[in-house]
Length: 312
Ligand SMILES: Nc1ncnc2c1ncn2[C@@H]1O[C@H](COP(=O)(O)OP(=O)(O)O)[C@@H](O)[C@H]1O
Ligand SMILES: NC(=O)OP(=O)(O)O
Image (tube, rainbow, N blue to C red):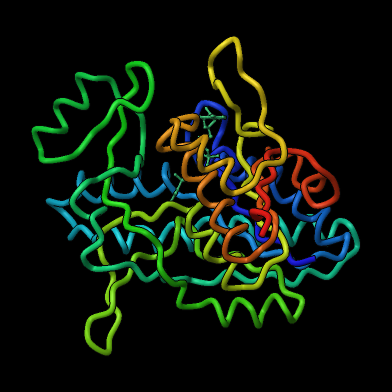
């Protein structure tokens, strides 16, 4: 089975959301053990990952050092996070596979995702990146022209434009590699935001939602299954209320109706649900939202929230 797995931020940072190198390395090692189980079982695996904490930290470093070294644009920062996280994932997966007596075949691909130049997302920054801050700190940053929103109780985060992913330019290469037995890390951080400029492609300043890109990746690479791996076992209806119940198997229409009723967090579970719904809709296969620990079960059984195509 060909499986596309999207790893959430929690797969690469410590539980407190810190992005210290040692924490990232340790978290990736744990994630790659679960991935190695799938590879060992004979599945073709395509991996993608988030970069929200990392790209926000890089952007901030650029801004803080602007007086001494020229700052680079946000799309360059996205490319840099793809390289760093891709290298971490390859090292960890290779080590794990060798420990199991298997010769690793991994590749990380710098990947560009085409977006529309006039996407309304450029006018309404919505993608949270970087560290959390207090209301007072957020207010101070706003004075510098940055956009900040309250993402949870008194926790603020910077937001940047997040256009819709339209096409992954490296999809054919990724398809060839995975068909040839490679485990491929790609389209990290949603891909490097890119627009067409005449006959050329140029980067644009944004951070694309990695779950929506994962959905496109799974369609473009003809995956049998899309797994969105996060820190909860399933999407929940009545989230945060005494009536909370995990959502099991649902159709695209059923889950979209729940989304329209506001059942899923806008910057968190919402895009994940939309990602699996799009995959089920356009590929006619199941998309699963579950926790990292359940990746293998997601392939074998019926854990997590499983969005299936609508009946004809
Ligand atoms: N309806 C819901 N069901 C489950 N989790 C939800 C829901 N709405 C919001 N969430 C939040 O979404 C989080 C997962 O999204 P996010 O933190 O963006 O994941 P990741 O960084 O792993 O991609 C959960 O930890 C939970 O707090
Ligand atoms: N690019 C992106 O969606 O990253 P996170 O999942 O880490 O927010």
